[in-house]
Length: 233
Image (tube, rainbow, N blue to C red):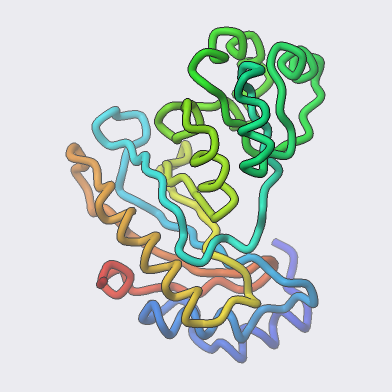
């Protein structure tokens, strides 16, 4: 593996032992102080779980809105019948359309990060599933992105809605905010995230639910978090 640069090694020395788990409060403080970038880096959490993503009763699927947002306002596309276009635009959607927008997507034109659709549009949108699905952009009732309440769906995404789900290796990844956030706000976002994760524990899990938790920033070192500390409300 390539050796880390001088700046990165200096950050590791500043952080000290990054493998021994710390309290959530200590970990948040440490990574915020040790961000190596000049830009406003993203604060991330990476969790190794004991869940087997191949087992239906061990899946994790939950959504929540972080109290202080994610620090990013994603570009939202709304697929809806014409009668709801005005509502979607008023709510803050960046792109709004129906069959015309679906046709553009099928051609490969995807200029958005989140897709929301009304139930009525899903039959037509299914034609674009092969394009949107691999990119993780296909609207789904489970994620709250298939709904008749377009205003609430768009506003939740703008406020900082995130989805918790397993990757193919049984891990959960998420953003918790930006380095520029006040330490108190990052901590409150983290606690809100872990409360939802705790409540989402699958009924069929046969191993230790949360095995390791690591906080990090864009291009920065990771810091281990005590599981018990993260789950304390």
